[in-house]
Length: 163
Image: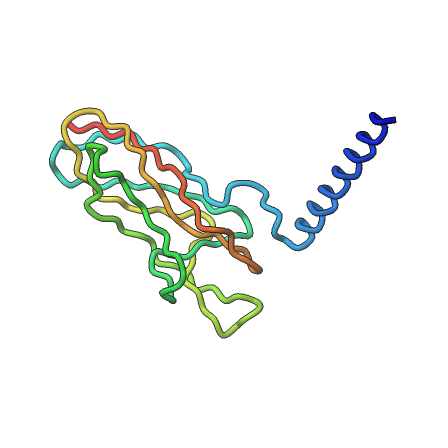
């Protein structure tokens, strides 16, 4: 009798979870995968102690956008690249692509500056002599046409050889 009650409760819990998943999928807020992906790890050889440029490639999930590095309103979260200070590599600057103008269907008077699809950040780095496996980070906030997800930070692994 006890096993039958546990089985009924388990089936009911699974049915409720499935119903919520279907509601989320129908409302468009069902996440199908990562919102932003770092396309490929970079390995670069640069002259030690001199500013060098490298391109970092990212892809945004289909149906999503992220705020550009220079969003139109101060309360919006900009997309930013960072490199930890103790990594042997210093981020001397970064050039972000211009954002595309985007209008939300629910409020056509609001214009946003966003990235969609693929984008490239050009980083200027200065490396100390030696091999450095740098764990950089991309901070962003992804949204669809109806809602925004919480801000997120993803790793950006870069293998830098300073010669």
